[in-house]
Length: 490
Image 1 (cartoon, rainbow, N blue to C red):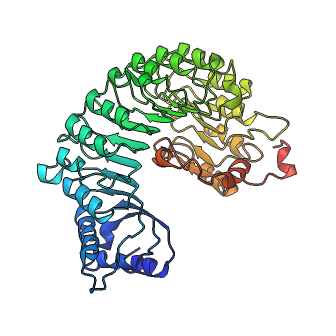
Image 2 (cartoon, rainbow, N blue to C red; image 1 turned 120 degrees about the vertical axis):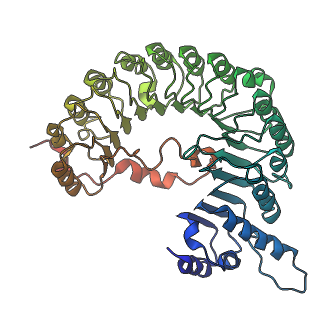
Image 3 (cartoon, one colour; image 1 turned 180 degrees about the horizontal axis):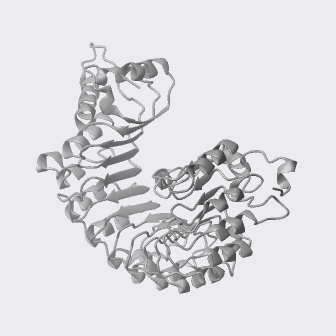
């Protein structure tokens, strides 16, 4: 897709309301790039861009501001008059960028910015406390996401401290969702300011919060907060005590505690009483089998549970987890990178008759052919073999041999759409399987499988009234299964 294609798209879609282009906009570098957006639909309310160079974005915002400031007798095009949601990635998030967005796009209710520096930013090309003061001048923002990725360089927003967050929180009291990633100099004081200033906050996400401790949630019970989504990834100073305080939010629906290495069984014990907790991510925490006993005996209606890399777990955790009501609600389970999980553990999953739709067991050296046979042989209510699984990730499970490939043929796993296997698997057999099952997405390269894995940011700002129900029957039913395919045969 080139600049002419972008121009044709904007000119030809006069009623466009939402535009998502997961592209590198440096390919569209053209002297007329900024001005071509004047032909975009006046009804455009949502714009998502994969990556755009900072210089191109600033030039576009400058033209947008100039069009607003033109004299009445000069008939200038209006840029983005209805835009409410802006999501994009740039080289650097800077004070100048924040100020330009606030001036050019005064109607924004949703701002999502991410950068991934390849070199340490200088003061002129970085975000500071002063830049945070420029956010939300009209008080309309409901969602803010500011994330510094460490994809290329171990860095953070080093020029932002508690003062910047305090000043921002004063202007953002109407926030419903906030995501902050890479604010290494912000302490409990700054994060507490957000919690106490934003009474309508429902979704809180902090990643790489190296100075966030239990004190953030010390008196959360005294606030009027009703948090439903919380993510505290890579917050290594957070302990069981902080999670116990957080658990006073009985409306918690999604909780991401991945890579919080100081969390253990007592944190899970507190969470097991949450009556609305559906998604729980505990990857890399210090939990043992006892934590799974708490969940199994608890009240959580879990639909998704991830414990990737929780190396203290063993096969014995599986019957403990499925001892209670979790067996009825759980649909997604991740037991990857746990060396003690073996074929015997998967046998216990099969015996529990839990109708899982997604099962991830990647990089477990003791998982072999018996696992595939057990899962392929599972039946529910007289249905077909392996009938519920839609995703199965067995990447780098070294004990799986080519003999297991026959169990992936029809009629087994009739709804399977995603399959991960180790890279050294016989390529001829893999290609034959793909040809025989054209609806199957298969990977032998270690890619994360599924249409939306845990890090899909849409989960954090998606409206509750999104029309997803219409897709559900198709997602559950998969490709049609004929009567003849329900008969097991060679």
